[in-house]
Image (tube, rainbow, N blue to C red):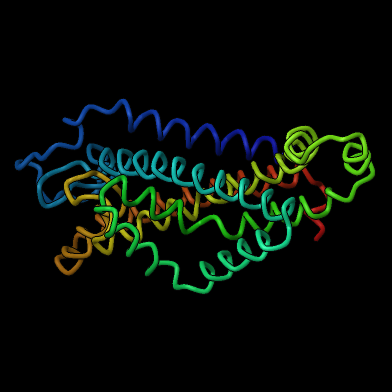
Length: 267
């Protein structure tokens, strides 16, 4: 019951942040030169920046942007993992070796460097970030899917389907995908925090979203230039908000994993 409550609250908060950011009037975080560099208060909960922009509304908008980009990138990456994991385990032979080689290659390269290079090659911006995150986050989930498929493909009912003349596509659709789908969903959710953090990281380093876009990486990058002036709130509140969102996604994934597979909690 406690897991369900935590899961529901985290989903509710994340959904509220995403919808609030999407529906927000740009005037809410527009520059106001009469309110520059104000400390946090009841009027401006997270203070204002050097242009007088309200940091609370800007942070909510930035989180919403990061969540949407993270969701899209993680979904694309998880679909790649599902296809490659099933293909590798079902085909075997050279296909399996090729997929495992690609997994080892991607996991052996510095993650952030690879992400920045792909984003830069794709022209940065939203497209570059999404493609960069999607292309670099599939290996771990591919291994999980492959292991699950390898385990089930020798099951008696799968062998019976083969003897009845069913082809690999029919077996994958009727037996393999339904079996791996719960683990796939958990893996997809656990990809979200990584996708959001890496989106913010490469944006902070200048290889992600454009600097005129209200995103957490942009906000933190700008904040670093003004910390020496005593404007600590510019980095503290957005950074804390990003950490909370990542922890909520992680809590959703872990609790969902425990609900789907109770024995995993004792591993």
